[in-house]
Length: 132
View 1 (spheres, rainbow, N blue to C red):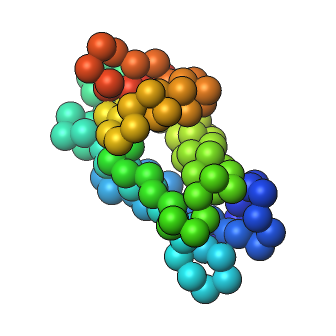
View 2 (spheres, rainbow, N blue to C red; view 1 turned 180 degrees about the vertical axis):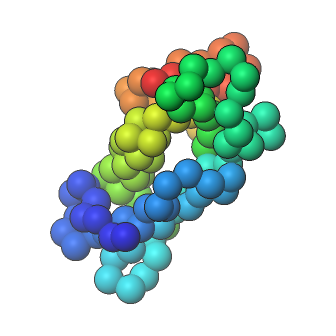
């Protein structure tokens, strides 16, 4: 499934997963070239099984770890990464994921501002979380 990615560049598309799975990849293409991706994984406690504490028609609450989000060097600072993260967040909301979490690595002050602008909260050791 390819959708137009809402970024500054024309004709950039994103391939999203179909539904939830233990490992999920979002791939960004410019033409036939992959220019970015995001990788998510469900934590070991999820396993997509209903818990006994759930009501009969209530969906299980699943959290995903944002393992990696990467954009090719030539496509950075053009809104591709932000648009990709927006797609990941939108997908998680649509699929009723309870939270998205991870660890900021790299230029921490810049990454903190970027993730915080997307709604993520941080703890003192740069772990981040966005609850839905």
